[in-house]
Image (tube, rainbow, N blue to C red):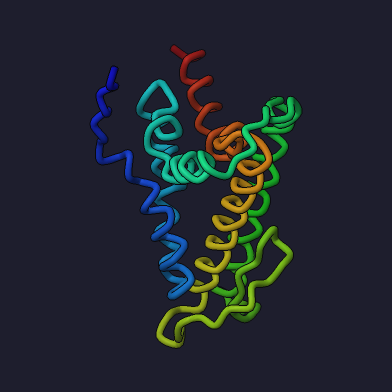
Length: 193
């Protein structure tokens, strides 16, 4: 018996935007600003709806991990500690601290206290040796924010791929800081209602 193929919706292809984002960012770091959409849209959806619709339907990174994981994941269960609230919230606090640090450095560049650091770092430590497009016509703080934000997005995606290879394809989604934030918003909204 043949199963009917389920019709794909427009949002089933959002994984392409994830690839596009990282590709464009390597050629011109200013495209990193588009990542703010991945940061703000989930928060807006969780504030206006009662569920984690973004994570469950629209997350391009989750879709990409699922597609690649279908072939390359070991499909092992994720360790229990990664599912615990304490790990998820500590990981969220860590990511938020990195975000605040990125904003602090951007503010320093804006105020002229420090110079632009034209570098992408992985895991907040390892610098990528990459030559970027000419940024002479851009305010230094705009470029600094782009480098910092792209570094965070790339680091979180690499962590997603590592857990995808080691465990199930969407294991990253279990402890994703954005997912933890949106889930927290949904819990608070449900308690208030």
